[in-house]
Image (cartoon, rainbow, N blue to C red):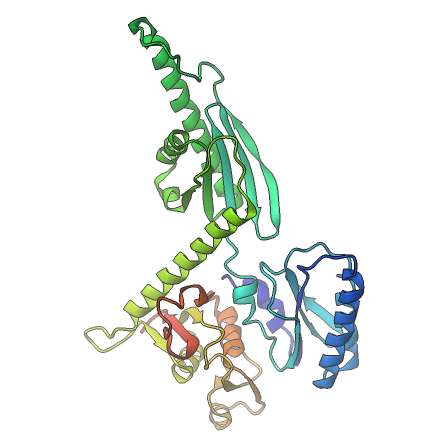
Length: 370
């Protein structure tokens, strides 16, 4: 997950209100229920010591979602009476929550807003294709491709005199497949789609697949539906979830390989809070890997005003010359450091069944240098 959009949260001092709210339920009573949720979460922040201006800003922002049709939810980050950032979520949170802390609680975003694959769906037939963009927020038309319209069907005759006509049919199919592949490649470049889902008869799907540029072929999923079918939301979600699992497995494999010492005894990956804190202070984190339910994720660390001012013990910060310090969650402190140095972060929950204890404690990183 590219963390650049979080920069506004670290340009101002804390403490911060971090709120996650579910908007996936839509009934006749939804506006009233969401108003009650807004009041309850604002009261919760007040009980944790938040200032009244921030509590009121959060309540008003949540009240503004009473009639929202958002399918999943929203996060809000507020301080000093202002909501600074309110990203939509790609999947609903397990429960509504509010936290008042020195740092914004951004770690849940890795699962709730990160790894949200965009699917470019092509409904293919012999005449062309309709394109559709599908995300967790819904679907929208992405254009169409019209190939040659004649001839597109074989005849049933076996007369040798029909060979020339049959060749024209083959040429039309192949031409149209090339047109569709070119359009898909252009649309993928424009939309930055993570997956290309091909829907149609097997032969037409395979013809388009074979004509795609080499760098796109690993993104292709061929849906087992014939021409004229339309993908259900469950079909798309299954493809998206498998993409997330493959990505998590790939990064975990990189991590496991990198943590093995080289011939000089150096490793390209670290795990555990002390080693990660040291790497963050030295700006060596290249990618942060987090298992949000890992025991180290909520472990206490100490932070100063700047992102690279963090330590396992409060006295360590004083040794480093930092006079002001606050207690923070390890995952949130490491994400702040990653944002400052331009490092991405990834939740590895999707691959935890394969590697339950990797990284150990739930926190790890690939390093920029050993």
